[in-house]
Amino acid sequence: MNWSQILVQEADFNLSEQYELLREKAGDPGAIVTFSGLVRELYEPGDNGAERIKTLTLEHYPGMTEKSLADIAEQAAERWPLLATSIIHRVGELEPGAQIVFVGTASSHRQAAFDSAQFIMDYLKSNAPFWKKQCTDAGSDWVQSRESDSKAIKRWQ
Figure 1 (cartoon, helix red, strand yellow):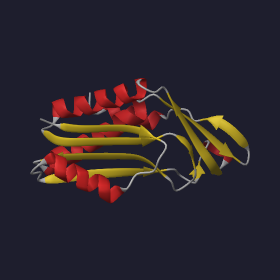
Figure 2 (cartoon, rainbow, N blue to C red):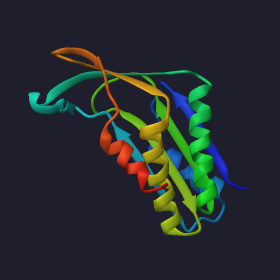
Figure 3 (cartoon, rainbow, N blue to C red):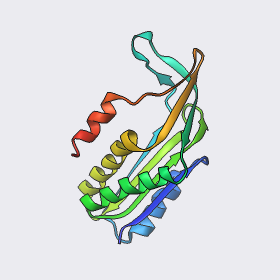
Figure 4 (tube, rainbow, N blue to C red):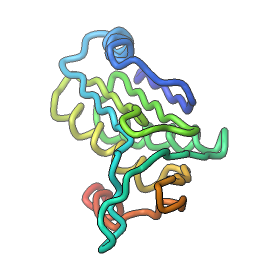
């Protein structure tokens, strides 16, 4: 049985603790792959040059967001022989450099762990219901989805 953890929270997370939890819950994994995303300091809105981000605020619909993340984890478990999966996504107001997302997968085989973690991250970026508002010296605006995110999931279809 594939153990799965889905958390949407304001609190930060500890990478070492999450790795150890995956290792424990997976039983006897041959590979564990983790990814931690950070809030970037610079955002490039086209030809205007880079703007420094002061804060990034993430909003979501409780219940709906967790279900969406669980569905993504389930899709990964159907494609690869996973022993454990963890997705943590932060919400609220975050500053540059803050951890924003954690994805971890454990499998008996390294390629399954690598591919499944990337699959989860690609689908999370494109399909998870989060709304991001960035605040810069120039003002604040909602972050639009990127074409590169949509292209990333096409390879999994």
